Length: 248
Image (cartoon, rainbow, N blue to C red; front, side, top):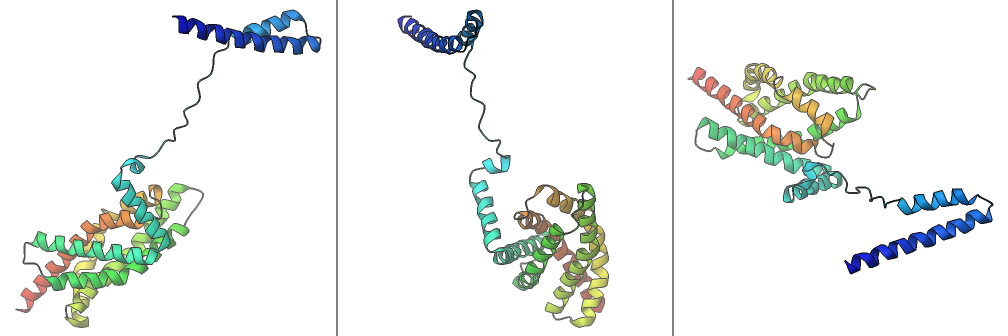
């Protein structure tokens, strides 16, 4: 109680001193005493305003500890060495995709299959990165919906058929089946793969260009691409088995 009383008397004394100074200023300027008294009363009754909340609203993905640090390290690598980062990412994605496809088929692990996928993924890494950077810089209109829709449409119209043709033809050529075998493989696999890609990639592309920073788009697409590459590898192996049975 005593410390509280001392605190209250100290606050009143400071308030009185401030009011006295203001009164002297007001009297010096010829302001009436009743106005000075009203002002002094308002000063004495005013309470301290608490400071505003200055804690920034940090997104959830930046508060995930070690996972956030991993994302940030990847972003720095993507900004400083985009080609090397993209190449390494593609090698990991294609290797995991092929290993997953082989496990799905339930067959004995074939290292040559993973080797073919590493060659295909490493070769396509930089062109694929440049393509998505091109999409990010172009088709930007006043309407965001129109911009995203155009990017999705162009990606499905241009990139998907070119990449799928490259993937399946290279699988056949690296396996030693020649040009005729590559043409036959493309006829069997590209139409069905393009049809199934419509079920997945337009949504992924739209989400990526809407919400994901350009330095993290490759990582975002890469996580999804592990599953997609598993499907492509499985589809390629299925077509290869059918071709082998038809020749025997």
